[in-house]
Length: 544
Image 1 (cartoon, rainbow, N blue to C red):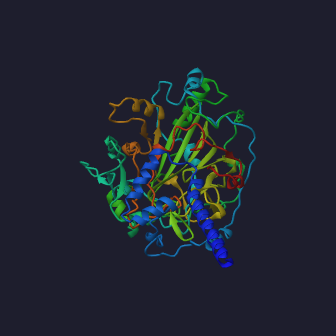
Image 2 (tube, rainbow, N blue to C red):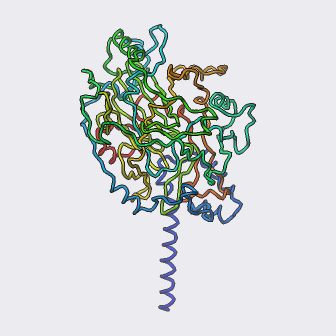
Image 3 (spheres, rainbow, N blue to C red):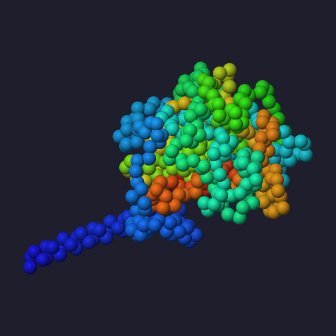
């Protein structure tokens, strides 16, 4: 009898343990997901699970969140060099060996650049650039390029900056896996016409990305080490910083043309001063010829020591009125290599848009936003690491691109996110220093024109995006493409796909810059926006 009772007790304990384990496995992805799925997303997920021909696979996926476990294998960054720092020990030892030297400044009160102005208040007292009736000059102001970021790419990166024109050449337009018939090959001048489709369009790779075609790596666009007279990542002389205005401490942090700063300069002063910044060009900036023609793309060229990359960044300037200009620097990569958890890789996708945004007030930089996965962090300008320039020019901010994911950070080292116990992390270091000011597509964007054109369904050609005078004639159609710049999420039936606890091996490619809330009032991309006053504070805070 005692043996039976003992066996029954063991069976009960085992049953309770298995039941608790199943419950934890079921609950874990729901707790880790900061945005629970709605009814439409749940229906789409059921359809995704049903793509598997294996009944057992479908059941373990539905009940245990273990999907496609028979597909799991090591996913090397590059076929030619599968060795990368992937274990926790290797990443931690790498991060601990990185040197850091930062300058911190305390924030004092609110400033009038933190919130963009409203249209009503602009009509009452402050004009936006170009509203005075004079011909608008679409030149890129000196202050934007003089304070452009310098980007440390990761030294062991496998997927380098890409030219969007080159990326499109390797893509085909698909809707639900069906090829979209187009009269001409896709390029930057006709991509926006795909919006005539009723369903979501995905730019889908013509190559199997797991075969790692060369265009995916874009190795020809690797910048070489940046050389100048300043220390790499050290303190800088504050005398190079722009002068502060006496009305700094008002509400600059949450503004657009409909919501002006609480302190408003007189209309004549604002209009004259702001238009002066836009028209003045003391000396031309040495932007290199833009890349994109087939001959140049095929031949390639090794970047020089200036930090030049043959892959152009994308600069989009947005005038928020009342002297507020947001300068968005977009960085494109043809592939996002996801991070590993216990040597299992999650989050791969074709196409990768990352960005930073510098908010200027009357030509003075106030803060910078750095994109990080679906969100990001904002920093006061004084808090950022700077690099001095030659000839007494203002010091420029230095930011860091994480290996694989290309998420943007303000410091080198390890950056855990989402998962506890540092299981999931980005890693940055002081690899090749990229100067996007030397080669970029430059535009001005008017979000109010876009809103008016969206209300008019008969509009065929959108005029809200205008090429800057430094590169007149650049195509603008690509900007209005509202589909995705990479493959749709691979089905469960695809041998390349798996999903564990809600995290996919391959996810959907991103949407383009137009979907990044360029009309934002606050500095941040998300509604939650805390502007930190030191890099150390940024490490302790999370955007999610």
